[in-house]
Length: 187
Image (cartoon, rainbow, N blue to C red; front, side):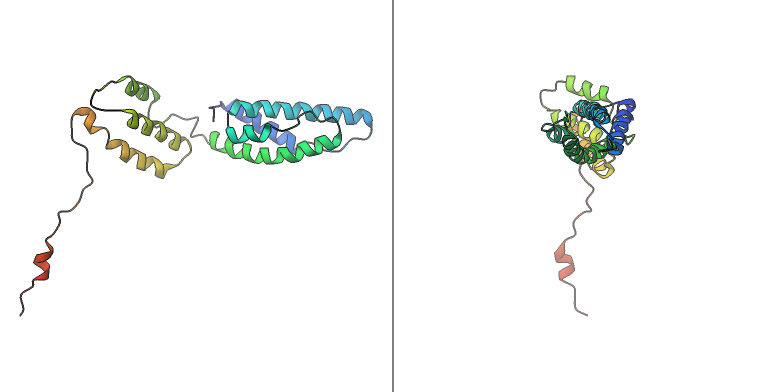
């Protein structure tokens, strides 16, 4: 999903609210019917354009077959019904994007990730470490803190070889000899 500023997010939320509250079918004569269809057409097209900005595959597939040009009230009713599902998915996506975490600073500085990409070490491939840092930023943005902790630990295992040290190992207590416990002298 593309990164959006807070203004774009609030505009999409406002469009979603307007479409949801739009008075479907409230027109007294042919003149108001035309105005109704034109206004609904404008709202639907603005929403579809905003959804395309998100670059989200699931939303784009949902809007790909929509007829956003209602010519009759029945077309508007059908469009309104289909847009309800789109609005549900859109609100879920905006909740993730607008949660504040994605707009805040990333966990791993993007400049550091770019610097890691520029480093060339003949014996070490930093691709895995770079990908872990990118995924750490994604998990942090989505507030998946357990996944962040696991990725931090995994990334720590890749850092020592860069400086010439051995890989870190988890602390394990020394093994006891079983035979010492099996052969107990009789009393």
